[in-house]
Every structure is written in structure tokens, then in C-alpha cells.
Image (cartoon, rainbow, N blue to C red; front, side, top):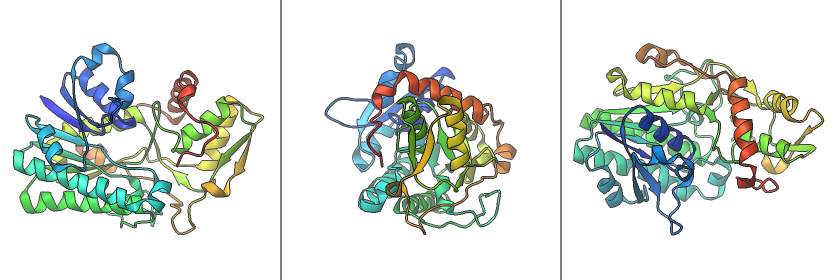
Length: 325
């Protein structure tokens, strides 16, 4: 069966491509067109994986290219998005174009081409600060950043195409994913790269917010488990561990593992505006467990150690002294 992954050149997308190939799927990888002919993290995958991957270079904001790329595929894992929250504060237009219009392009093409399944990627950020825990799929939505607002819009578009056109859509909502290949705009690689570079003072934003962290392979297993179950069509489903840890506790855990002499410094430039900060995210995975055969396979400790080892070997790819928004 041929499936396509948009955002295949990115963090989660590259892991998803790799796992799909290992499971025997024919994979088309939609990567962001650029003049360097870079395929992002796909360029680092083994040749035995990449020989089974068809590359399509394009831009998810271009409806013609999206439709062309989706010809001949039975399912689309739509991951392409702009995701950095701080960048969305000053460039919201680009988030509307990529996250909302890009999703619309995928949905329109799927409807026209008769695509058998569409998995549209959401984010736990659509919930905003938890009104109750664990956060299930009936929790209200709150746009606490332009990024999360555009993801709410994309989700509701996907829902509408299921309800109006009977398009077989599933909204997949991972909580905070981490692991090898993640950019330093995320908190875990930010902490680890500073520690590995020998920094005595680890610069972070707010320390009290809590997050529900998924190791990337568990997130990928969630996507595939959702896809392989017809019971998930028309649903929106969290991928969550149903465990939380504060950013401060997480940072101290990593300090203890790498450099016990380091200390945490709160950097005002890394703080979100007060009403934009999502203070608590703890997801319910009850629905995921009911509708699929997914099980968490990596503990936080195992995932962190794997991430540390990857970053040790790839530290030169990260600009440690620059705050990556």
C-alpha cells in the first residue's frame, strides 16, 4: 500500500517515514522545496531505507503541488506545519497560510482524488491550559498563541470535511513529542545541547508549567496504530502518556544525568506572554487505548538517554549560543 507523509523532512515526519518503510509500506515523502535540494532529516537515513522512499518536493501552501503529490496514494499522514510558538507571535500570517490553508489543500485534494484515509496532525496546544485533567478529546479549545489558533482552525476544517463530504479523516493529537532529530526550538534539546556544550548556566523560560512528553517512536507508533484501525475514522485522538513533569523538574533530571554542577537561569527573553503560557498539559490516552493496539514502549528515562546519545553525536548541527525560536 502506498502512503504519503507531508512534513517528511522534519522531526516526527522522518521517524514516521522510517518506521513505515520498516513495516513494508510504499512511502512517498512530501518535503519542502528548497534550492539546496535538501531533504531535511531524510538525508541522514540509511540508504536501505531511502531506496524505498519516493521524494516529492513541493510546498504544502501550493494546492496544485499538493494535489499532484497525492495522486496514486491511498492514505496521507499530514504532518507539514509551522510549529514554533514564539515565531508565531510576530509572523502569524505564515502560520495561517501553512497550517490552515495547507491543511485545506490536503483535504481538497483528498476529496477530489478519493483518498482512502487522511490523518491530520493536531497538537496538545489546542487545549490551552488544562481546565481538568487528564485532558480528554472533549476538553474545550483555547488559542493561547497564533500557532495554536491556526491548529484549532485546521482541526475544525478537517472535522468539517468528514461531516460534510464523508471524507475519511482522523485528527491525530500528539502531546509534547521529543527525541532524536528534534530542533533546539523545543525544550528538551535546548537543555541537553547547553549541557553537552559545557554551559554552567542553563537558560530557560518558565519552569513551573507541566507537560506530557511522548518519545518520538511512541508518537510514531501512535500514528500507525490509528491508521491501521478503521474504528478511528471521524475521530480526534490524543497520543499521550498520561504522565506529567514540570519543566524545572525535567531540567534538573537532565542536569543530574549530564552535568550536576550546572544550574538553571530563567531568561526573560524566553518567557511567553503571561496569558499565552500553557501552564498544564496532561493528556488522557483512554480513547487511543480503546480504539487501537497502541502501548507506550519507552519510559521518559529511556527516551531521554536515547536523545542525549543522539545529540552527543550531532552537537555540531546545533547553534548553542543562539536562542532558537
